[in-house]
Image 1 (tube, rainbow, N blue to C red):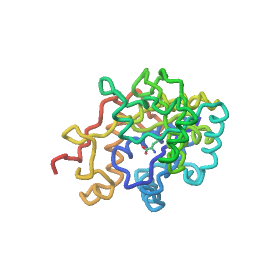
Image 2 (image 1 turned 120 degrees about the horizontal axis):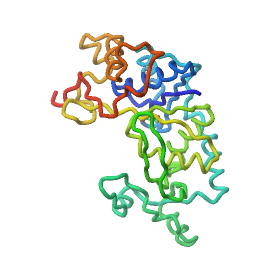
Image 3 (image 1 turned 120 degrees about the vertical axis):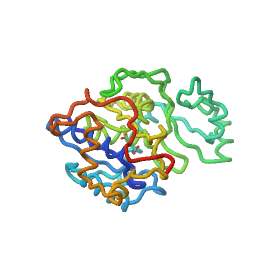
Image 4 (image 1 turned 180 degrees about the vertical axis):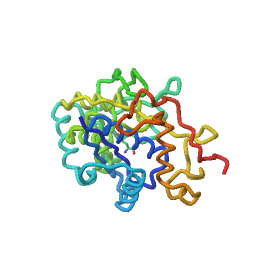
Length: 293
Ligand code: GLU
């Protein structure tokens, strides 16, 4: 078994990210497994090698170690394009010309659930498709078959979520996150995926992609998000969300690490004693942030 932490190198890791990384790493240490880091830099506008090395420094500063050089997604487009071609060969890909706005207008999101693609472009005729191509370049979506997938999350227990026709390739030609993550986890031999709880619902769509591509299933653990004292997701205006900010407030990286460890329910445990059973499924209120400051 192998675990990983897969940040997007678009800025400093905040304490919520570091807490998730700490859990991902300790879970591997506890099972004497390899722990890998992968840089999810598909978005070339917001990602940079500089942020990547700053993020690795933050991980190292709180005592996290990893095996080998981090894999970098922007160097692996061929792998993702092969997977898209494999789906295409099974007639499981269609072009989608919708804008975000068109999707939002057409998609009813019942009870605040996730917005699913409402299938506008799923069954275009050749003539309709040719006409739309004149207007704009299409993205590619998977013909997922819809329905739901169910899995047992190590933190949240049994989860059933709807499957979406997620984008496989964006209309700028870049492979999309949902393909890259599924392909990389399989190619890297990942068996435990640990990440933020914001990705709990999309997991169902990723599981469907795994099945359609004939890839093995993995175990999931979605670590609850960090919120500020107002109960909101951390934003730039919150104080003390990154290691440099906490250092400026007089807090060393190892002190931060100890607080994060305790908030994962692991106080008094060594790293190799890490247990998912002790991790709360409630959002974590960061002691350092204050939404009003
Ligand atoms: N790169 C994603 C993020 O930073 C995480 C994806 C994953 O772990 O599957 O939110």
